[in-house]
Length: 345
Image (tube, rainbow, N blue to C red):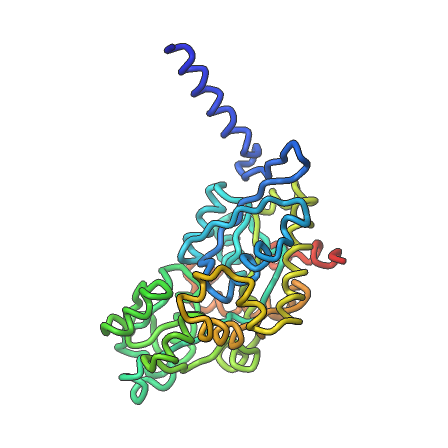
């Protein structure tokens, strides 16, 4: 029996090892029926900014491509990227800016489908503070919420503060999460203002608990706040994986770009009806509104706008401890590729 147990453990270890390439990346697992298993981590699957990932699954577009996609979720992009770096997943649906940040740490991560040209986020302020916190110039001495340290909401909060003359040491950053934890932080005074996404924005505004101070769900609002486009929601993957599994990446691109087309040609109500019922949190009308308020952020072809990528680097180079002083060493051509989305038919 002991010998059998040893053999079983050895076989399990061999099987787990076989799932990793020599460079440590997770291999996409082919099946006997010709389909391929793929794992994708989403930095908050219920967030409207990452809606294309779950919607693609709901529409059956992954399966149409012969992919068995397992969608996992972490509450923030910073924790989602760790799953990719550790080799636990094949890709992440998160913010493009992580690819630049990670390159300065010696990691080659590339966006293969760029789904949005703007963050899809808003800086909201608790209604009780709306008269005293009217712009980022009023951040001094305030408690500002973001998803988690190192997240894109943290990056952008720092940028908005420093751009408007408030040093990062002059406000208190608070890990507020998203959804109900963010709403609770507004409620109990844990934060005075903060950066979040829909459907949290819609819930806060509808309840009268908060007001939108800066709206980066639109191109106009993003350019006003950040000085240009800020490509955000993307499917990004390890460069080595992309090179080794081009057929799989192409299929992922085919499915996601088809979904972007669906979003562009269907109403928010149609889209909401395709999503899991629990995503609406018991208020379908408010969920439809949250999608309607944000769906304009998504592009239709999955391509990166080069000037947008340059602006992201510009923003990060001004305050990110990892990117500051290294702007000239960053090779943007390695942080994204349009190779696959241009081949989508």
